[in-house]
Amino acid sequence: MHTKGILYTVLSAVLFGITPLITRAVYGYGANSMTVVFYRSLFVIPMLAAIMKGRHISFSISAHDLRNTGIIAIFGSGLTTILLFTSYSYIDVGCATTLHFLYPVFVSLLCFAVYHEILSRRKLTALSLALLGALCFFDLSNSGSMLGLLLAAGSGLTYAFYMVQLEKTRLSHQNAYKISFYLAIFILLETLMYHLLFSSIQFILPWNAYGLILLLSLVSSFLAVVLLQKGIQYLGSSTASLFCLFEPVTSVVCGALFLKEALTPAKIIGCCIIFTALIIMSREQHTAASS
Image (cartoon, rainbow, N blue to C red; front, side, top):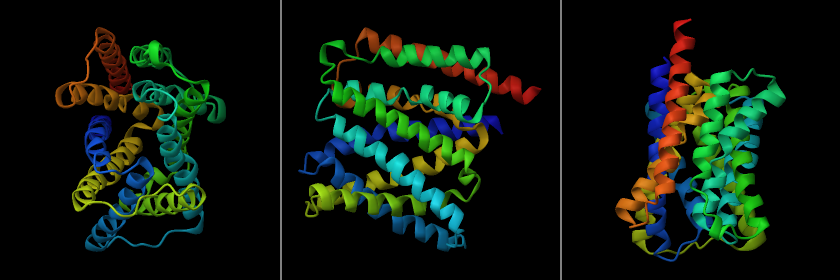
């Protein structure tokens, strides 16, 4: 069971890690971040609806679960995207992404402070290594403004809220397709509200851009999200968040291979430290399973 959870979470992280390549291509056609988020949600809704209908999954959802899904979507995954993408206007993208990936620390701290979960010595060691590994991706020469740093770090906090609440409200134990369906609807509505305030969505794009966003929807808003929810179901949010650190590692490797980005010694060291943290957590899972 723990092996399945690790596999689901790692696959989810890898899929999330390759989405910047697709997003970069979409930006080349004149789209912006909010446009991508809007169309990504719009395209994934009928995908999920078709799968639910084909598998005879009921669309009915209790008022309690619908309320929790709305809260998680708006203040969790939706707000995360807005904060992270907004921070790109103030600080370097690599710096912003690094700060965002401090969210495993926020997850464990939220579980400890709010739900009084015990942090084992091995988990504390893994968290410390994960934090150290994430800091290796931080570029001190492009730290930018304090506002950008706060926005990027805030995106890590809101994403931690999403992961914790998905488990604690037991939505992670509901059908993953159904929850993803309603999450996408709420995020779509959130982006429309954002557009009413800031006129940020570009509705007319070249056909190639729509095709790339459709691919992005399939990869990031459908496959990766469903796999992450299944991973949280098996591992819990605190442990799953550490295996999600495969995402920045994937992004670094893909950036070096396909975007010709520099793979600096600091990034290589950071990848090694993060993998060490993941190995420690994997042993923690096997120990717990054996006992």
